[in-house]
Image 1 (cartoon, helix red, strand yellow):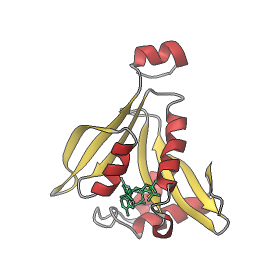
Image 2 (cartoon, protein in one colour):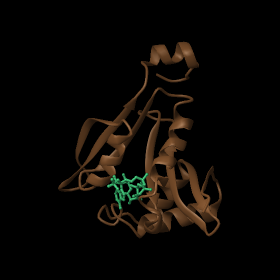
Image 3 (cartoon, helix red, strand yellow):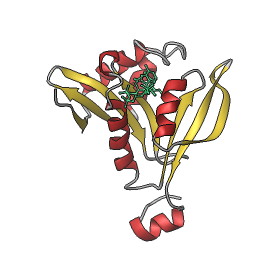
Image 4 (cartoon, protein in one colour):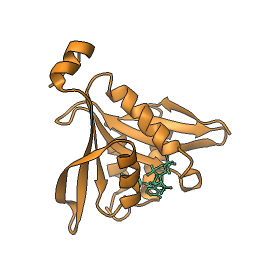
Length: 162
Ligand SMILES: CC(C)(COP(=O)(O)OP(=O)(O)OC[C@H]1O[C@@H](n2cnc3c(N)ncnc32)[C@H](O)[C@@H]1OP(=O)(O)O)[C@@H](O)C(=O)NCCC(=O)NCCS
């Protein structure tokens, strides 16, 4: 079945993405509530993967703030995991971010080693550990996929922030 990934600002996609988060780890352990999920989605860029039966996964990213190129959340519905959709969603967000920043950052919870393994296979490396950031006893691991320095990036791509 063919899957398409496209940017979305539709409320029904935002609500679907929030419901998916609430139904899954790591957000259950992190104690996310519906309003938190919806707020994060509405503050970010959203892309949704869908096949002929409907949405199957989504990714959220931001291009402002301290990290200027940050994948905030990614989720694929359980029935569609393990078939390359997560990698395709990350490639979609990276293409958008790398048009304006040489770096892509993301965080992964310390209790989510399978997701971390996927990111490391895609070239992300640990640059920090944010201890007890969201809930006590668990850390968020900050990962970075690094491109050129900001100076080189500005010379070749005209990026706007440093
Ligand atoms: C992580 C996730 C987005 C990856 O999407 P995907 O379509 O399954 O990923 P791909 O098919 O491109 O790559 C497969 C890899 O994803 C990771 N993965 C697969 N299922 C996973 C799951 N339930 N939880 C965490 N990581 C998972 C593994 O590293 C897997 O490789 P492996 O089969 O060799 O172990 C998806 O599995 C998911 O939504 N997991 C639950 C939510 C989550 O952990 N999100 C990340 C928060 S930082």
